[in-house]
Amino acid sequence: MTRIAVLGLDPAGVSGWALCTPREIVASGACESALERRDVIVAAKVQVQARGLELVVVYEAHHPSTGHTPSVIAGLALSQGRWFEQVDLAGIARSHTVGVSPQTWRHWAYQGARVADPDRWAIERCRELGIAVSCAPQACACLIAWWGAHQSAEVMRIAQRARAA
Image (tube, rainbow, N blue to C red; front, side):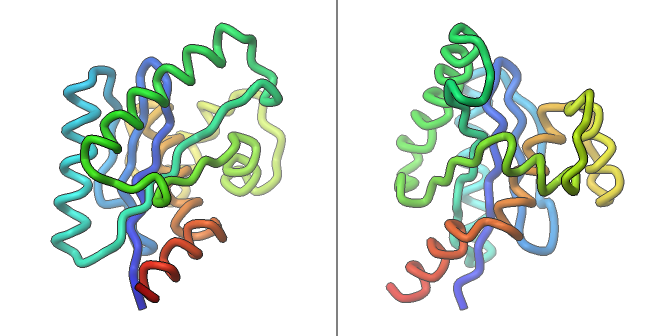
């Protein structure tokens, strides 16, 4: 069976990232610059290859129906594009990227509860899961990665295609 690792991304001005296997969060953090994004992608690729795993990038995908203003959507798209630039430069196939709406991963992470302060809840949910985080973007990325490793049918299809190849 091909095993996977998920690089979860919460693209924003300060982006959260987390590398996760189905068993653990391997590494996580937050970054702002292109150099930091490049270092995250390269390190994730090295760690995943050393473990003999298949890397899948799962990112929070925003679009107009998520309820954000056009300027917020534009800013998020810009950050997402900066991450994709690094993913492309690292040679990670776009077929190994999966977008997840905030509603989808949050519904799973918050166990269906409606929350007034999603960032605070993300940090609290990580603590409940035993995941150490220092900021909301990092917490969101950890939950996105954890969701991808455990809940995403699309991530599982990528793993199956890799196993069949």
